[in-house]
Amino acid sequence: MKIFIPTPLRVYVDKKDAVQVNAETVGDALHALTSQHPDLRRHLYSDEGKLRAFVNVYLNDEDVRYLPEREATSVTEGDSLSIIPSIAGGC
Image: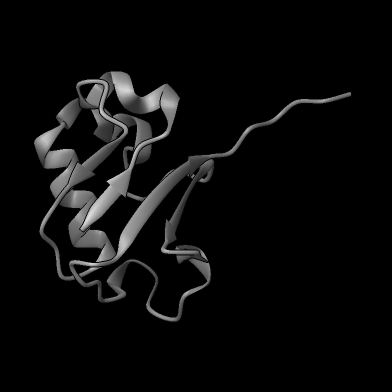
């Protein structure tokens, strides 16, 4: 499956906009990504091993946080994950 990488995190994945991984679940895909690119792990996960609150992950167009099985959701080769960091600010 393909994982799309946001611009601020591309420095940790050899400046690629997407990374191809083999996985059975969302969690497996993220683990494969951080295994291939270990410097990315600290930007996605807390010290406790949980996805950081400001990191949003979408399976195709669905927010993984709202899927019944969350990170245990099954994926296929044709699926894609998008990592979207939250942005704060404004007036």
